[in-house]
Structure formats: structure tokens, C-alpha cells
Image (cartoon, rainbow, N blue to C red; front, side):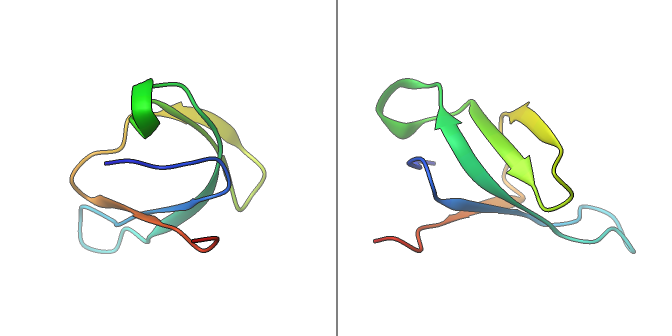
Amino acid sequence: MQATTGDQILIHGRTVGAGEQQAEILEVRGDDGHPPYLVRFSDGHESLIYPGPDSEVMHPNR
């Protein structure tokens, strides 16, 4: 998984009834666009994440 600042990350719910979460990537802390990523979720919460296989990066600026 590779991302750049400004990309969006979509985290799919892993259990029945769990909704998807979408966040903006604020900072890429790994080498060559790899995780971890500092993200801001739609509710304003910021977190450092290591996305799993239930996640996908969207590149709206490319």
C-alpha cells in the first residue's frame, strides 16, 4: 500500500453492522509512501494507523 499526503483512505467494516470509515492522510511516516499514516477522520479525530487488508487508498489528486 502506498499513499501521499492528501490521499483518502477507506477502512471497510470487518464485522456485520460495522460501518466504513473514511479519513484524509495528513502525513506519511513510512518510507516511499508506506505506512504508518497520520490521518484525520471525518469527525475530526486524528490517529496514527497501520492499515490492514480491509483498507484501500484513493488518490483523488492523481
